[in-house]
Amino acid sequence: MEVSRREVVRASLAAGAAAAAAGCAIPLSRVGRKGLPERIEPPKSPSDPEYRLANRLGYGPVPGEPERIRRMGRAAYVQEQLAASQPESPYLLTMLHRMDALQLDAATLQDLPEPYVLGQLQQAAMLRAVYSPNQLFERMVDLWSNHFSIYAKKAEGAYRKPTDDLKVVRSHALGRFSDLLKASAKSPSMLIYLDAEQNHKGVPNENYARELMELHTLGVDGGYTYKDIKEVARCLTGWTVEDRFLRPFWTWRFDPSQHDDGAKTVLGHRIPPGAGQKDVDIVLAILSRHPSTSRFIAKKICRHFLADPAEAWIERTAAIYRESITDDGAGDIRAMLKPILLSDELVHGAPILKRPFDFVASALRSVYADTDGAKPIQDHLDKMGQPLYMWPMPDGYPDKAAAWTGSLLGRWNFSWALAHGLIAGTSPRINEVGGKAGGPAGLAATILGGDVPATCVDGSLQATVARCLASPQFQWR
Image (cartoon, rainbow, N blue to C red):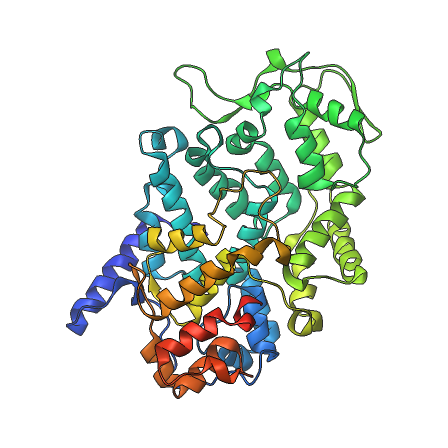
């Protein structure tokens, strides 16, 4: 979500004034954050509809959130999340505006160490997942970041990924899929990652053309042929990145001298000669409107929220995609999401394993932790096997449970460290949450959603938290 510098300064000044007026040192991470309720009413069971909704729509409920959803009503909560317009906390805004990686262009960032830039981008993602009230928006950012996956270590990609994150993913996460696809096709980060700048007239490079159809639109069984790959690669010739002297470095540009301007045929559609850079516009329109794309995107969204969705759900969501096709775009993401989020299948369906990033964010939220999301947190995430933007393949981190069985030891170690305050820059508010929830049993029910195994409750609040976060129940949403 874009916020002006003036808004951040105003929020920071207000935070400072509030702290001064109180006459005490208030951690910045708590300023502007909604306080915990006077009493936390733990969910009765993990199948509690409000607890399950918060657990699957976002990164897990903060203490007291299921009760808030119950008061406002499920439909109103879903609409609030689809709007994604709730104000962000002054702490989150201030932290994000302190980050060079989010304020400077890619070329300027080159003056900074690559690990520093990548670390800030990873930190920003964790802070947003933990602190943003627009939880659905952040979940969709994660989905599209993996759908249009870019390996930050290839060809200095870490310097370009912040711009891609803002102008591609975050700008269109809840908009239209066709707009998201177009923005990605002009992303220098994506073009360099998939070798598009090496795609020239007479010697086409097919890498981006192949992934554009296989991973971004039609799907591997979407009905295209190798001839289609070659024809799309020809359409993409000259589609490159600025590297000329005294020009805006690492921005998209079209080089007509390297473009194959002959006639092409893509998926049965003839593209006439002489169209120039409009070749790609035509290709993207063909792909975004194709029935296979509607089904491929529908299945990905359904899997993200419904685990193993029934065929009827995939087809229903694909139909909404197709119904939203107009002359200037296709794939209304909000319209596709709404029936899923209001469905019984969302709150009563099969559980979904949390990937490490989801697990860490939900653990921090469950104990209302104050965190900077920095390297100590990222180191734990790395040990679980999901350092953000570091998946080397273009298909994004896997979403199948079998892919993450090796992360269990890292999860247990993180749970213990978080519960006992051993992570620098992160302070769980266990005593406060436990006191408002009525002690260890209430705290465990708040974290796990009720039906707490006896082995998870200990006389110590810290031990109870460690056992709950490491329990099999907490690994699933």
